[in-house]
Length: 171
Image 1 (cartoon, rainbow, N blue to C red):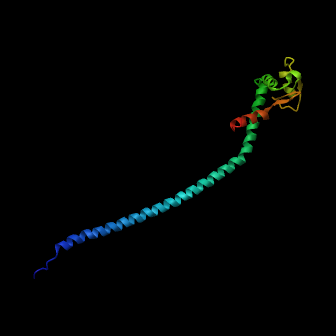
Image 2 (cartoon, helix red, strand yellow):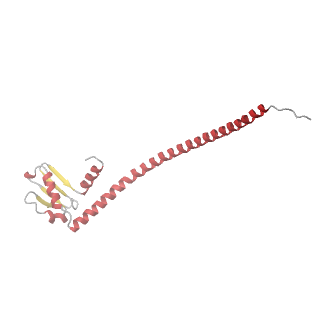
Image 3 (cartoon, one colour):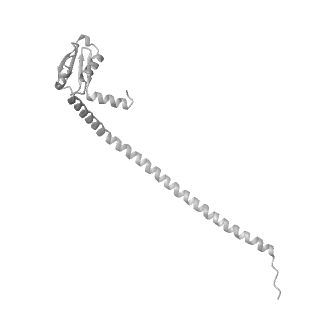
């Protein structure tokens, strides 16, 4: 029995059409995967940004709560260093007194230099420029120069405040 004749052209065009359909399905699946990945990345990005904001806020809160304790610690360390310098004789209190005398107005009309009693011997001689008085209200390592026009004080608190002002850009 003779075989029926097939149209070869139809078969030749049918195969590429099937491959094209499969390719479209693959492209659609790939696009869905890309969209899904983009959505997951957007969600992850939003979560990371939210976490960064929360971390920044927490860090600022910790810094604010720690700052007074750090300032107190720095002052305590400075006082300890100053105390050791005084005890070892490396602190030039006389130079500080001279600087305060030169900064004070009205020294020529009479000045009184007040120092801690333990520092009195280190600065008792001011070459007649001022009267030196031992005063327990003055911190160790500090001095207060009093003239008819006012007072110039130099103590640990003032020195630390000056350092902090310089660090903060206020000086």
